[in-house]
Image (tube, rainbow, N blue to C red; front, top):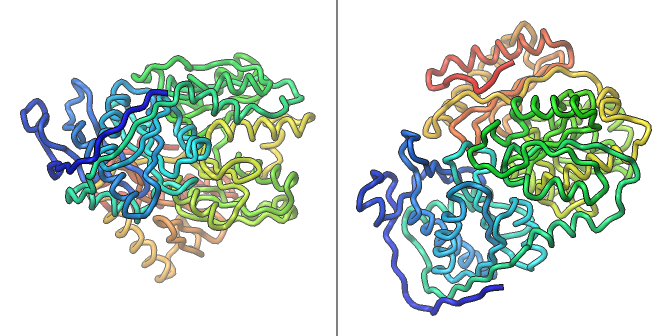
Length: 517
């Protein structure tokens, strides 16, 4: 370990600007922090790269300001001034983390740096090092050029809207507590401590061949070895670290990554394909036949498995998730209860804690396991191990068999039409009012009566035949989110999509989809 301390002294720092022209004295001398980077539960900014043609939303002095803000918030909340930091594998992440650490130390924080890491590795470090706070530098699966910070001051939860709003106000107003007195400690090879925690257990008894797909993201440095250590035969796929993401973005919700996993499963005769996002807190799954299984359906399967092992259990899912959590008779017979809550890893994580749920599942691939399975935070590798354990407990069944045992529904992938951050919430408000008016007037949607509108997060419209559709604002990108599911037929699902898309297209601010059905 390397340690040094900063002497305590008064410090001042300029108030951030919302826009500064690059390659100017001002860009090198003043902090740039675009306000829209402070999102509902984490922070994301376009940091930029040469030739992108896009104006940066953050510079290194702006990162320092964010670090000062995090430290100031922790002090004002009465939290012990110790914080874990780590960074994902991007060409600029280490520099951003260094700037963040400078700001944290200026605000009196004692920094514990774990180096290159997955987000769940940083969350684990809060427990292993007995540190209350975390600030993980990552843009997750976002395109190269993005950066961000996932933050928390109360393990195992991360910031929600209240903390993000307070942090935003501190940073943008330059309202810092800068008495100095911070310190720095580097924890060498902390990844091995994390790996030992996950692998200090009996090896699986069933021989399983597993494709581990990492999209050239950070998980490639850690996930394959951990899966091998619990007894899997691992087939690595795109595990070399390359922050240009030459094949596809490491996003297990994206069909391009899922299709690559499916091809590898079929080519190698694997039992399962497991895909990890850029910072390793999400997991996507492909079965032994090469069929992509959306994370909400994997959640139903895991809820069945965990309820058999641990007895009647409480679960939490996000509003993008399948209706099977309520309609599946086998899950009901096991005494399982499910609460539908707001989409977003911070929201589900808090809800899992507050309800003392055994697990929470989010359609994006965030899975949260409480004791005795996990510590309450989202960890893609813990999720992968849970899927492997489920297979190990069902030695006579393939993953395709377990999936086929679920009631059939037809659902879309998560589709994301472009919508600027500055207007997306206004657009959602107009769409919500439109659907509420349709329901009040007794209008039908795609020829079927509207029976329910859930407003917990965006607008989820249900019809009399059990078909439903969701439109909400993305919390971390300039996009909307659209999901449709029907227990009736693919035709009915497509009809519902067309009807909801027609309402969406009444708003000219909405652009093209990143993918469609």
